[in-house]
Length: 466
Ligand SMILES: [Zn+2]
Image 1 (tube, rainbow, N blue to C red):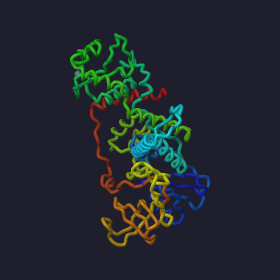
Image 2 (image 1 turned 120 degrees about the vertical axis):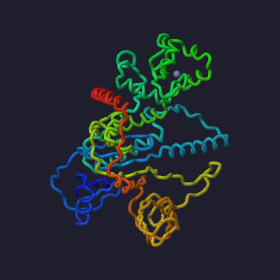
Image 3 (image 1 turned 135 degrees about the vertical axis):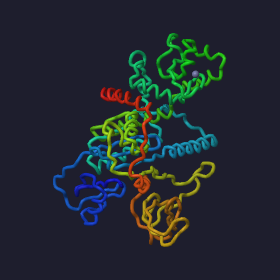
């Protein structure tokens, strides 16, 4: 079952999403026309007076490589999308540029005035991270334009580093294991790889351990905490770590080094999430933030498979019992807009080779076209394909079909569909999902059930308090 279809009134105000069969009917009777290909939007040809629409919420699960999107109306999930980011590509590109610059500057020895105040402005995000915020913003705006959106719900907290920096974990709250204690624990488990820091034992209950003992003035900050098995914790007691590990200098060195390293990935994910929430608040009056614990609980308790858009659908209270009306999410890949480089650089980093013209009969790189292939070519069978243009030049254009480059020297069999907007589009293989109409049940391990039931109660208290 594919995604539902967006529908606009004649004045471009959004109406309710419609079933794909209804969309086909409207089109075949000439009552609606295609307004946009990706996402698929139809526009009515005759005006509906005073339309009454349902209300939809956009649900977003931001991640470092993928961001899941889902549109929910009541209990129904009517539209899903998975956005693949290109942070790695951006990072590689920036590093390459830095390398070229370094090379040039160390070579030609001309005097440069020292540049003052090279501090980053407040709220600065690395380009690879900022791209995540910007692309999510683009898609929220697109959805708001095409659908009557009431609120945005997103997963904000995985590890709350801001809270971790100001821990109030001494005393009752910590010992009784509120959610906050839970987050600290999760953070430490990740950071210390679920092992005892002293002896490396795995798969045993681990206790939170102060590296510099509290009795000797050690703090409760997360940077002073580690995990130890019961035996090691008891053996160490309130001795100083240097004293305790006198016989094992290598272990001591490793622990002191690791303790200073923040959980980099979590920090980056959190920086992005806070920025995304701030951005969303500028786009929609109602933005609700939830924790990752609840998402996982909702997904597991309904026996749903792990997918980014399903995670998005399971966010928050409304994700407790959902009805998936679409089994074919739109898969979107961030492709960027190429570059504005006038000349390519040679092996030494100097601008040298003039850039080739990359347009063929108004078709440029990244455009989506429909091509018809008369007879089998390379590994591609004859037929009609929708695909992305790879490298056009004055002699023709190449189109990427199932990973094979097929070149066309005329426009006879190439029909323009969609102008490049920086994204590549594919629908997930519908057949596979249709053959398994019910998602395979994943049972929730007993330990998790017990733990999460308790956590869920705490979650409600914490989320209510916000
Ligand atoms: Zn141990």
